[in-house]
Image (cartoon, rainbow, N blue to C red; front, side, top):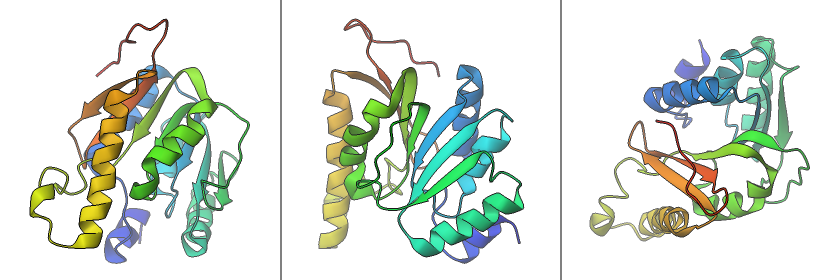
Length: 198
């Protein structure tokens, strides 16, 4: 059983195909070689990112010990343990000094703003912060019809994160309506919007 099949059979959330394809193309176009991923799960996205270029090195953070152990196995099975470093810990507590070309946020949705603020200092000058699941299965657009209090609260936090990105003058953010919705945020240079490629 491959990683994707395992994820589907065990209800492990992984990046959607369209989003993965888009991000891999973006990584190749920008020639990004260093990636920080917040939210490893079972290693599906980081493995696919690493397989797109033999020179890519990835640091990925996973809080759940069972996911962490599965990710380690999957990464080792793909002979990528020399290029993907997995950290078991809460991303809000982990301290990293390295800088990265790409920071990929795909962990606890309610903490997206905190993740962005914490790790934006780890972004290289011409790097990009990409966030996944901003449509959240269509619920962001259907927020008014959500009856579950907990779900409304979670989706509300995603909406506030989207507003945070739109209002953030330090970053030029582009929203891409593919997969479950992603955003690309690049640092604004000299107070002029940087040019985001499609």
